[in-house]
Length: 453
Image (cartoon, rainbow, N blue to C red; front, side, top):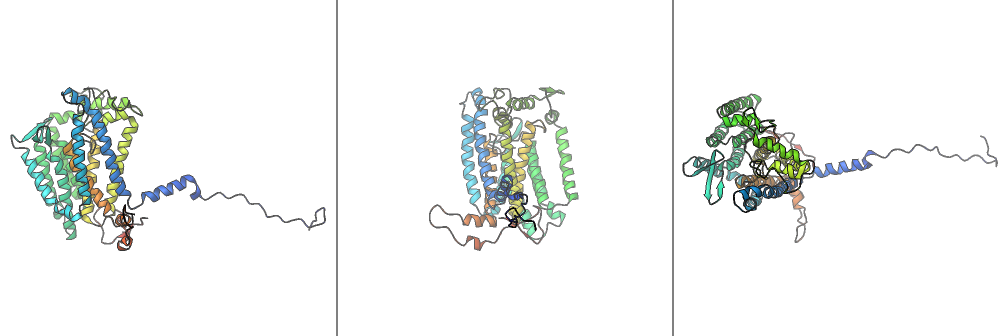
């Protein structure tokens, strides 16, 4: 062994190894991702998304109704806040309905299915009685309540179809009857076609499209085979083509898809084109709240069917993307509630409501963007119209009630610290862990643990 200058043996120093990189879990982005995923998987995520998303959509809708309707009200020699006050009153009543629906037990929801369906059918038939029904924009689907208040019974037909169909399919599933195609179609499809026929008597094809979407969503949830789907879809598509071909107004709306000039191929596309003008002039952050130009008489139905265009003009791309994000969160939460429950009624009802709100939002926004024909349907929770707002808020209350009724959500709510008194104990012990399913369709006999945190 070589010696040092002092004659002592050299000191053995440990070999310095290169510093190992930190585990990826310590990376800030990785930690943020893990924390976000953990928060997203919490039992009350769907509850907060539904309650918060619907609240924000409604509040933003009230703001935009006030902004978009001022000029229309002044042109009609009415106060500038006329439409806003009516929408605010409907939102307050709808909020009460939402709270009532969110606190009602599932058994009571099922008990209300048949009375709501009978009432909706009666009112929709009453619309066609001369002297009672009213025609608005060429559609005979309104009933006057006196003064300036009107009601559109077909909007309540959506809620009636969802509740009644969910109860019907749940009872048939309990008896193992959904494996037979005749039990899956009867009486679901005939009753749905009855509602569609009453709606089409008034000429409201937009609402008929929404009911058709709800029907197909329920059939998918019930596990309808592909050939059954194709058969019902073929019949519906054939009837739709006949109804469009026999109506010059509907053919003109179809011709306005993607139009860039007010007159396109002989069709009057004024509304569709000015909706595009409003979106295009908004830019990234918009021209400012209340500063829309198109609402000064250029854009028809600025506070109802085309309120999304005014939102894009005043709040820009940021505002429209925010609205889309809120609807996407609401749709995801509804799918999550329907996918994690073991109660068939809750699954069908939650899936039906989610299909209703999502399909109506897609059809409305697609028409404003020029991607779909103008169907005359309002943007849920956002556009002006109490008849559309009240049943939609009740339906959102259903989703909130279902989200609270999940086993894991009940356990989390029971462990909360109450405002007064001690924390309630024993909730987690009473409730078992949550269960989830891979699909929202009709379930297999066995379940798997959800893995919720």
